[in-house]
Structure formats: C-alpha cells, structure tokens
Length: 297
Image (cartoon, rainbow, N blue to C red; front, side, top):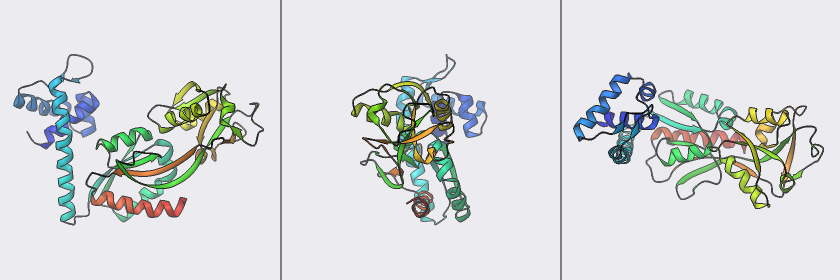
C-alpha cells in the first residue's frame, strides 16, 4: 500500500462513488476499484458496502478513513516542506470561495497572481462560507474566504471587506418608500434565504431572533440573482450584501438600509493556525493581502 492507495480510497469515500472519484482524479473506474481492492486484500477487511446505488463506508472503512486523512495530510505537509527547502517555489493551492464573493473580488487577483507565479497552480472550489470553514478545518482546502466571525482559536485571518446587509423588497411593498427599516418591522414578512452551507443562512435568522421574532422562510437558494428575481416577482423579501445590491435594477426591486441593528457583512481570508503553510499558500496570503487591502479598504 502506498499514499496513492489512500488518496484514492479517500476520494471514493468523499464522492460515495467509484465512478465520480475516478472522474475527479482523471483515472478510470476500474483503476480506482483495483486500488481500493488492493487495500482491502492487504488489510483483510471490506472498506465499502457496494450493495446499494451509492457505496458507503463499512465500520472498518470508517476506522481506516479517520486514519487515512491524517496520513495523507501529513504526507502532503512533508512534501510541501521539502519543496520549500529545495526552493522550488512551485506548488498547488486549494482555495474556497463563496459564489457571490469569487466573481466580484477575485478574478483580477487570480490573474495577477498567475502572472507573478506561473508555476503555482490554483484550484478554486465554489461553496458557501460555512463549507469553506469546515473544509479548511478538515484539511480539504488550504485557504479560503469566510464571513466573520469565524473560530479565532482555529483560524488565522485578515479582513478585506467591511460592508452591511441591505433589505431587498418589491417596489410596491408598503415599506418601499422608506429611507430605512428596522429589522423588527419585518416580523410578518416572507424571507428568501441562502441555503444552509452559506453563513447568511444562520446569521439572518439569528439577528431576527435577537429582536424578537423567528423569520418565516419560504425559499432557499445558492444564487443571489435568483433570490433577487424572487423578490422582483413579489414572492418575499431578502437581505443581501450591499456589494451585490449595488448591481441591482431599482425598477424591479428596492434596496433599503436595515437598522436596529445594522447587520455587518465582513469578509476575511482564513487559514488554519496549527498546520504547515506551504510556500504557495504563503505567497497567496501576502499577495492577496496587499492587493485586496489596497483596493477595498
């Protein structure tokens, strides 16, 4: 058994499919099946239950999975440290970006970084901010963008955007002509939220509960433009970052400040405190800190 066997095993566990794992690794399904079978033969246990439509870990597979994650992570850390010692200045970075963040703040950053470091490859993973945090904590991602606050005991961070959430309502809504709206005034409204792997999925209801009501949620989505279209169709209200609201057509929706309380939307780049940070990731941190702070602070 070598490190590749464990990496392939982890991919199958991640996707619950030999076919999808093979596609992610750019190898054939028979090859990855053979690799996993080799581990099972060597250890004398079945790692996956293959009887259903999706393969699932057996009890023995769960034990191996827990250990394999640490082994593979340690191997990658060792490889990164050795590369740095040899001053190869090459590498690969796995970066998590929430969808509504990536397209607004990072295209130019990534382009300039690639110009400066052509031998460093960048893998972008678009998931919600909560998922970014979890994947960095678990070692799936090296670094990413999260909505503050995060776990200060686990992550280093630097803030690059400080904005607020704004209220989105239909132009015919009774509050549409107001200059600002108190959050408590929305107690009877129908809310459209981001789905559960987005930080705002929890943040908005928590703020509503703080002022005395639990929001009635009628729809959840991962796409801010779909949320705004739902509001434009007069199906409910939404709270979105002002960066997004600035791009909306006020003929179709009204954008108003929320007060009592204002709800901050602060973005930060985060990475784990207790893990080796590769040369590539160190350069990404330094590069983006300079570029983003110059542009958005």
